[in-house]
Length: 205
Image (cartoon, rainbow, N blue to C red):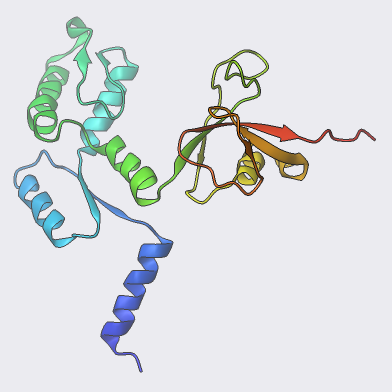
């Protein structure tokens, strides 16, 4: 017979497997937040805890859209490009972010949290399909035009299905563009693989 503690432990283990989780310690810029983040990191030893400031991320994206700053989500800095267009409130907000967010955690933490969840906790991977093996391009000559985000156990046939719903039916094999090796349909893809899919010709009716 299971005790209540056994049931609780089992439920936690099931959740870890079925619902990968990270903890985002938001509002890191507020007083006492850094101590709370450190305390959570120590107590949640098996969980990724990421300090963040969602307000700062939103403000920077809006400022970037208006052409006031240069900022790429996830970067460890931003650059004011139109100081002449900033009002006093905006100027103070940017100074606040520099002092209480970027100087503390080097980023807003939002994109870092998303990356940690997708690539570290869920172990997803990038895969690049190409049509032209020599030039790493599609028929129009665009180099590495597409990238697919796939789960860690995704195979070549899974990639085919991501590109087009009918491709798995016609997939013969794949080619590892870097090595030239022929890949079977059940080949488990690796992060940053560049592959070419070889399909059987569809018969016209």
